[in-house]
Length: 212
Image (tube, rainbow, N blue to C red; front, side, top):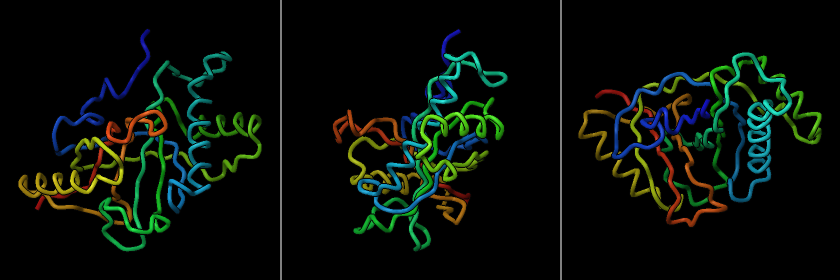
């Protein structure tokens, strides 16, 4: 059986050909919260180690033969991030001082992953890397709901023009931004900045919206 790759089976969530309105269904995630500049913050680097460590612990369990119930082979989905600052209504336009960022980093998990699977994976990873503060991680079921999204190509710091294009589309379509303490600026990272030139990076920018 081929590996399940959500980027291919649910392309509408990961590769919008143009700005679009989308109803995002409930999905399962591993998540880590933090704050600070992602380029320099040790907390952010640690969050990446935790999220990828847990995600690959589940995925590679097939090598030990101790797989969770209903396990199937799959491609680990891309890293995602929710971003905000202490000022309400943050829309992704980067502040001059990125140390003000607050964030939740997430990696989607297959539907067979449950709270029990998360606990099991945490125990396994803790044996391999006891220095990791795995208490920072959590299991989360999340239905994002009604959103508008667009594909940004280029450096992260140039997202402003793409966000303006998204606003132009949503307003023309009769929708308004719907940011709140539970509805954040959302980015999905389809490229690896360590291996991809900045001008070729692809990022889905997703904003919560409501009908005007």
